[in-house]
Picture 1 (tube, rainbow, N blue to C red):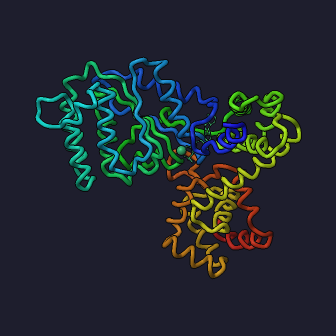
Picture 2: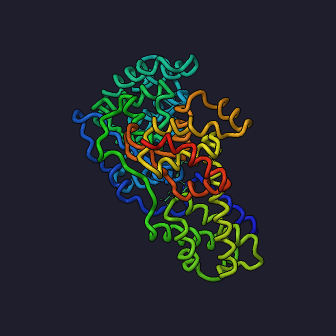
Amino acid sequence: MDWREKLARWANVGERGAPVAFAGREREIDLAIRQLEAWQPGTMPGRTVVAQGAPGAGKTALLGEIARRLPERLPNAEAIYMPTPWIDDNVPNVLEELAVKMAGVPADALRTTKGSETAAGVKAVATARRAESRSVSPPTLQTWRAFSREFERVAPQMNPTLLLIDEIQRIGEGEATRDLLYNLHDQTTFPVVLVCGGLSTSAARLGEAGLSRLDEGSILRIDALTAGEAQRSLEESLGIMADDVVGGIAGHPDRWARALAPPTQGWPQHVTCHFRAAAEALLASDRLAFDDANLRDALARAEDNMRHYYDRRLEASRTQTMVVYAVHEAINARTTRRTDAMAVVDAVRPLLGRHDAEDHDATFRRAGECINQMLYAGVVAYATNVTTSPLSIPIPSMAAHIAGLLTTDQREAVRRAIGPAIAH
Ligand SMILES: Nc1ncnc2c1ncn2[C@@H]1O[C@H](COP(=O)(O)OP(=O)(O)OP(=O)(O)O)[C@@H](O)[C@H]1O
Ligand SMILES: [Mg+2]
C-alpha cells in the first residue's frame, strides 16, 4: 500500500469509530469499573451507570475504552457490548454471550440445545432462540427466569461482567430488551453491572423502564475533553499516522497538535474532524510534511468537516432550520422547558414557506414530536438528568452554524414571531 492509500484510510477513519488515540475520561472509566469491583453476591441489586452526553461527546468511545481497560483492573472480568438496545432480536445473543462469558459455558454446548442434562444455561438459550424465531417481545421474562435458575447453581464461579449498552435513550422501544435489562438490574445473584451510554434523555428513559435507582453518582455527564487531552489525542494520533505512512512524514506533529487542538474546543467529534482534516491536507499536498502551509489547509478542512457534521445532525432532527433556530433563540433568551419549546415551534410554524410548512406538518403531527426529534438528534438537550428540566444547547458552535444558514431577515422574523411565546 503506498502512502496515498494509507493517508486516504486515515482521512476516512470513522467519525463514530474507535478513536485512534483515546484521551481523558479517567474518572468515568474508574467509576464504571469500580461498580463491578464492589459487586457482592446477595447484597445490593441494580448497579447501573449511565454516561450521558451530546452527539459526538464520546459515549460510544467511552464504552469501548472501558471494555479495553477492564482486564487490567479485573483480570477475570468480561465485557459485553450491546449497540442497539431497541432491537429485540439481539436479546438471545446477549443471553448467550452472558452464558459464555459470565458463567463459562462453552459456546458449542449452547448450540446443542436438547435435554436438561446439558450444561447450565442451555435451556435458557434454547428458549431465547425460540423467542427469536417467533415474534420477540413477550417471552423475555420467561427466558430470563429459566436462565437465572440454571445459573444460580454456578453462581460462585461466575466472572464479573459489564454489560455495555449504547444508545440507551431508545430503551423503551424494545420490550424484550427492556425486560432483560430490568431483570439484570433487579437481581443480586449475577455479577453484572450495566454501563449505558446515551443522549440527555437517557436517565429519564431508564427511569421509565424501571431502572430508576440511579443517583447523581451513577449518572456521568460526558462533555468536552480538556485542552490538554484534546492536544494529546491529536499528537498521538498524528504520530501513529506518521509511523504508518511509508517513508514517514517530515517534521514533528507536536506543533500541529498544538495548533489544531484549540479550535476543537475539546469536543471529541471535533477532535476527529481535525485529525481527519490533517490526513486530507497531507493527501492533497505535494509535500509530505507537517509544515505551515499544510497546517493552514488542515485547519480550513477541519472547519468543513465540522460543518458537515452539524448539517447531518440538523438533518437527523428532521426539523426545518428556522424552527431549530427559533428553539435555540428561546433557550438563549430565557429558561425554556419542553412545553415552552412546543409553543415556540407553533409560533414559528406560520413563518415557513409553503413547501417547508408542508414538510413540517407531514413529519410532525404535534410540536411535541418535533421537540422529541430534536432531542433525539441532539440539536437540543435537557440541561440536567431529568426530562422536566429546562432545555439546553448541547454544542454552541453547532447552534451558531445553524443560525448562519439563515438570512438576517429570516432570523429577525423568527425573533419577532417567538417574542410573545417566550415572554411571560
Ligand atoms: N476520549 C476520546 N479521545 C479521543 N477521541 C475521542 C474520545 N471520545 C470520542 N472520540 C472520538 O470522537 C468521535 C465521537 O465519539 P463517539 O462516536 O464515541 O461519540 P458519541 O457520543 O457516541 O456520539 P453519538 O451520540 O453520535 O453516538 C469519534 O470519532 C471518536 O473516535
Ligand atoms: Mg455513539
